[in-house]
Every structure is written in C-alpha cells, then in structure tokens.
Image 1 (cartoon, one colour):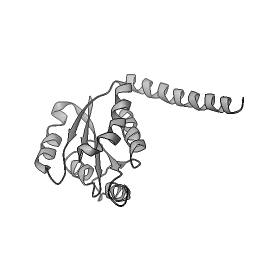
Image 2: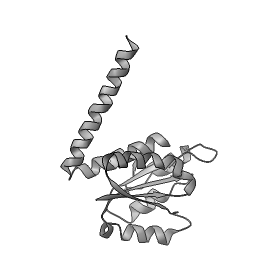
Image 3: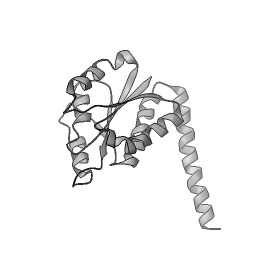
Image 4: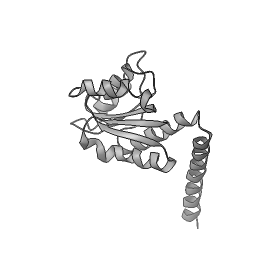
Amino acid sequence: MSVAILMGSDSDLDVVSKSFDVLDSFGVKYTKNVLSAHRTPAEVLNLVNNAENNGIKVFIAAAGMAAHLAGVVAAHTTLPVIGIPIPSGSLNGMDSLLSTVQMPPGIPVATVAIGSSGAKNAAILAVQILATSDDSLKQKLSDYKVNMKEEVLVKDANLNS
C-alpha cells in the first residue's frame, strides 16, 4: 500500500515535504511527482489510471492558485484524494483553498489547511485511511495520539512548575 503525492510545481516542495516526514515516521511508502493539471494533463491521467496497478491507495495533491490538480485527480479515480492548498499568489493561498474545497457533487476532495500544517494533516489523514485495513498502522496512529497528548501534558507541567 502506498500514497501518491502530486505537486503542481517544484516550488511546492517546501510545503509538501512536511507530508514526507509524517509518512516516513509511520513507515508508509509513497511516490512523489511534479505534474500539472494544466501543463501535463496527459501525464496526470496516466499516473491516475495506473495507480491501483502500482499499489496506490490514496492520493495527496498539492497546488496553488487555481489548484485544479486535486479535482482532476478525483475526477478520474475512485480512490480517496486529499488536497493541500498551497500559499501562493496575491491571495496567499485563499484562492487555492477555495478551489480545492469547492468540488462539484460526485468529485470529493478531502481538503486540509493551507500550507505546512495542511501537508502534515494530509499525511495523517492518508495514514488514517490506510489504517482502516492495516492493524499495524492503526496501532501506530494510536501511539501517535498518545504521544501528542503526553507532549501537551509535559508542556503544561513545565508551564506550571
């Protein structure tokens, strides 16, 4: 099982790389590609059409401005698609957010926050999807949540000591 990560531009790498770190920490395999819904539509379609044969179970698509990449992927697959809006242009990612979240009925894209926080959450959401059929990942997610809780409690204790 793996995740396919698509970026609309190599300039998105700084944001999207945060998802690599999360997937690596859970031991989830992934591929990464720079493909554009507008400039390389045939290549996007080829990747999507061959995804299941290549073990892909979830897509993460990151794009800025018009942010059509996630919607194009979702239009051509029944696999889950998670969109990361990239902060870019004069609207600093609001255009990306609205483009990613406003898919027409029947073309769902799970949309996360703009930028690096969204990239991390996209990876966690992908792991959660994969964990529905993988008990080892389910346990890793449970441990992850416990660790987050413990980190907060330590910060609280330090604040009040």
